[in-house]
Structure formats: C-alpha cells, structure tokens
Image (cartoon, rainbow, N blue to C red; front, side):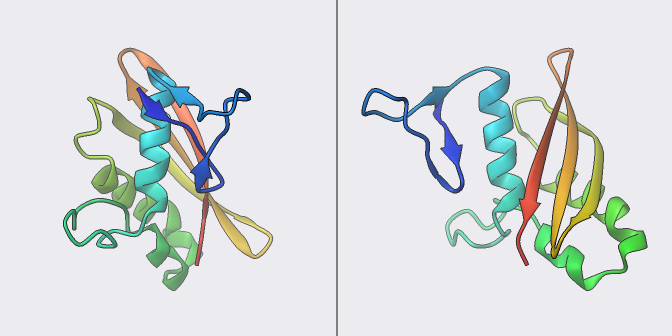
Length: 116
C-alpha cells in the first residue's frame, strides 16, 4: 500500500489523514512518480526517474519514439508492468505524456504533465 499523491503533494483522505492506494492504482501512482521525476535527482538512487524533461530539446516528430524509450527506461522493473505505448502532445505551453501499460492481464493508462 502506498500514499496517494495529487499535484506533487499527499492527498487527504477526508478524515484528517492521507489517502492510500493499492493494486493497479498503486502501480499507476508509482509509474507517475517515476515518469515525472528527473532521472538523477536522488543522489542515492541515480537510476530513479526519467529523462522526459529532455523531450523539449528534440523535434516534435521524434517525441513519441523518445517518450517510449524514456518510459521503458524509467519503468523498468516496476512490478512486472510493461510499457505498451507512449505518446506526447502539446497542451498550451506544456506537454502531456500518455502512457499505456500491461500489468497482470490488465491494460492501464495514465497521463502526466511534463515540466520544462
């Protein structure tokens, strides 16, 4: 069981505590954390995170292929989940990342806002 994050902060459970998640929701929370954390930002866990922040330096025509590569790299070893698809799209001045995962016979998906 993990704690639920919303907007880079713990989400309240409505009873004065912090909301918890488990199962597929827990896996998606961990995936979202790994995809939106810059790789190398934790000195004692240098392989944690992704290189998604580098996408802005590349041509938009290369974003999806790189997003797939970066997602596979960031989610390697995540409880048997496999990245099946990754795509990037513009959202105003920002970028949104859509990722699909296969996990325990289920197809899961998430959308993450990528910071510059």
